[in-house]
Amino acid sequence: MERSRGREHALVSVSAVAVTPRPSWKPWAAAAVVVVLVFFALGLIADAFAPAPEGPAGSSYATSPAGAAAWAELLTRSGHPVVQLRRPLDDAVLPPRSTLIVLGADSLSRAAGRKLDQFVRAGGRLVIGGGNPAATLPALLPESPGWTDSGSIVVKRVAFLPEVAGVSSVRTAGDGAWTSGPGTPVLDGARGPELIVLKLGRGQIALLADAAPVENQLLASADNAQLALDLAGPRGAPVIFAEALHGYGEATGLAAIPARWWVVFALLCLAWAAWALARGRRIGPAEEPVSEPVPPRSAYVEALAGAIVRGRDRSAQAELLREAAARREAFVKTRSRREP
View 1 (cartoon, rainbow, N blue to C red):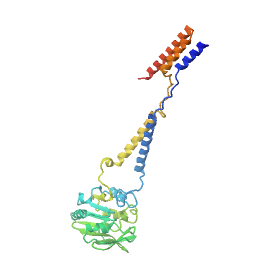
View 2 (cartoon, rainbow, N blue to C red; view 1 turned 120 degrees about the horizontal axis):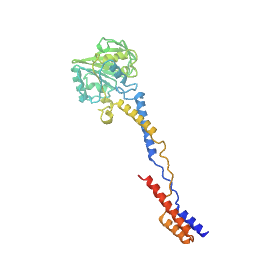
View 3 (spheres, helix red, strand yellow; view 1 turned 90 degrees about the horizontal axis):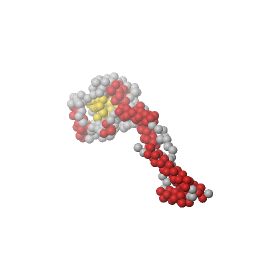
View 4 (spheres, rainbow, N blue to C red; view 1 turned 30 degrees about the vertical axis):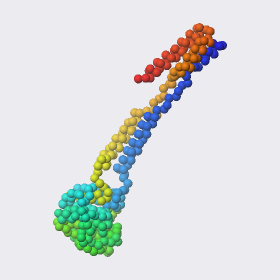
């Protein structure tokens, strides 16, 4: 009985408690990265194919009701090279045979006014509308026309000039009219002219009291689209939209990457995520059977020594030693197979 208890004590001491391995965090981190990339890619694709209306008033980038993106698109489809100028007007190079469009300006520096004066006198066409005429026109025209924020909703052509060659009537938002000053009224209404044209050197200036007829919200109304084409000049003439005054600077770094490239990158991310999900393990590697760990040295030696001392049966002691040696050998072999 004593020998049996000693043997059981030794076997219990030799057998250590199995330790559960910690779950690996790498599969979950990889899954989180894949989810983030998928949402990023879906957002880029949604913005590319179904963008929300946005952008400042008067900008050719803006798809909001007060933007001019539709005008820029119309000009491009009609054969006009369209350029979005992101440099300040006072530092820009303006080809004299082009049309410069300045919409929604709240102010205009003297240096910019001199640059525009040189541009028009050299043969350029300038279209100004919207914004604050009282703060922009004095830098360009010493005798600028008077302006009121109450205009006619419908205006008619009253002069036959190239700026309204195919126009009969134009719909406005009623947000402005000219009251006095130089220039030839071209579109007129009950509350005053909507469009006047001034000759300056070899070029001309078209002043819109209300920029709404050429903005997204009303471009498809009445003869507004035809007015937008006539203001651009002859077919094929370059058209420049001044964008620096709307907060757009010259694109550098990531901002210089075209939007279509971002869409391609998003599709590549989706393809990589699909490949990773198809090839990778869904919830991490399978857990291997837990082997018996090495028992503590001191407890192992004490238990084995006590069993030998208390035992009387030499054959039982030898068997105990063989079992311990076999356990040790099995553990070493198992660990050596796992290690690279």
